[in-house]
Structures are given as structure tokens and as C-alpha cells.
Amino acid sequence: MPPNKSLSRTPSSSVSATSIVSSLLTVQTPGAGFTDLTAEIAKFVREAGAREGSVTLFIRHTSASLTIQENADPTVLGDLLTALDRAAPENAGWRHDTEGPDDMPAHIKTMLTATSLQVPVLRGALALGTWQGIYLIEHRARPHRREIVLQFIGSSA
Image 1 (cartoon, rainbow, N blue to C red):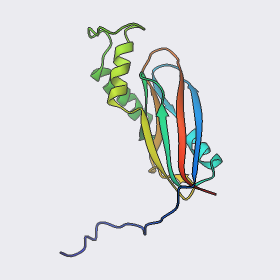
Image 2: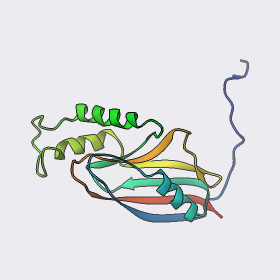
Image 3: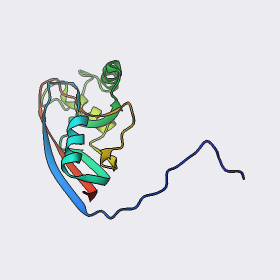
């Protein structure tokens, strides 16, 4: 079988994971919507002296989530909110409404998205694609204080 010329890969690199650096990021959200965390995560990676490894983000809540999504056209984020609202609308007869009609839909939206992300770090920088950003998604209508655990594991300078 001839080699596939549509594929290419850089040579592998190998490092020993000598560092674990952790931090707790607190975010005050304005209410439902996306909060761009990319610059703050990049700052954490720089301050950790990260060279090669990965950074893990874990949100400590059940009504907010994390995602990697397009950061160029803001209409994408609006359309994503619309899709999540359609998937889990308020006032759909949910039994759990202890904190209001957006409570159960927020839990469903979190289940459909992610509570943790892992992003590779290459040559001291997040290995995100050109149009990718890291976002916290607030699923509740009111502002909330959210906590995200950040952890870099890998080699450092």
C-alpha cells in the first residue's frame, strides 16, 4: 500500500513530567452566556513556566460548563446559546425548580457540554487552533461566582 500523501506529522518529542502547578480561577459571570477564559488560561500557563504538557480545567459547578469554541465570529456563540435553549427550555414541566425555572435546564445544558477540558501545551503555549477559544458557559440567568480548578502537568522552564 503506498504512503498517504495527505497526512503529515511532526517528529515526536518526549519530556519528563516534572511539574504539577495548580491554581483556582474565580469568575464572576454576568448571567447566561459565554465568558472567554483564553487569555487567563494562557497567563496561567506562562506563570507556571510551562514548556510541554497539558493544562486541565475543571469547573466546580453543575449549572455552568466549559467548552472550546470559535472565537472569531460572535454570532456562533449566540447560535450555540439558542441551540442549548432549544435542547433544554425553561417551563417544560421540569420537577426540579428549587432555584427557579432556569435551574433544571442549566443542569441539562451542563450535562450536554463539559465540566472539564484538557488542552495540550507545546513550546510554552496553548496548542489551540487559530479560531479556538476557551469559554465558561453560564447556564443560569442571574450572575454567579464560578470556580475553575486549573492544573498544568508537564515540563517547565
